[in-house]
Length: 109
Image 1 (cartoon, rainbow, N blue to C red):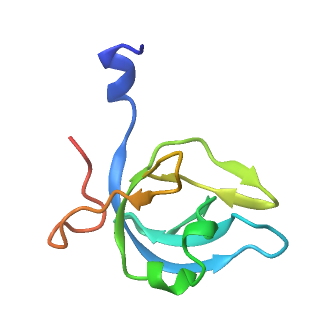
Image 2 (cartoon, rainbow, N blue to C red):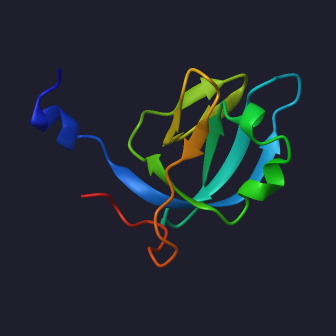
Image 3 (cartoon, rainbow, N blue to C red):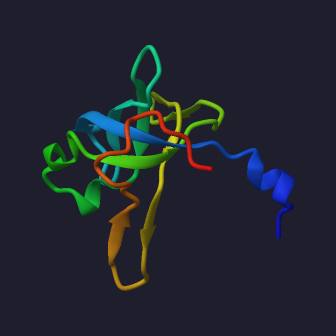
């Protein structure tokens, strides 16, 4: 269990995926360029490639992202956030996608 005060520290925001490409020599990793409503897009590395054999289907999608994680190097690429998704033991998978009218950069409350 975490306290409500700890939970409030997590910043979740709507991000629009601008580009997605498979990271070479990996099975699961994609490099995403994401508009989080900031001056410049962020690079986010995510282990969702197995669910998107054609990663171009992600371009233009709006999804929820954790926006205030410390940057982390993953296979030589800096990741500046985390996409929010759910999966089940039997392989079902879903990104958390807000309604289309919610703009990139909108923070969850």
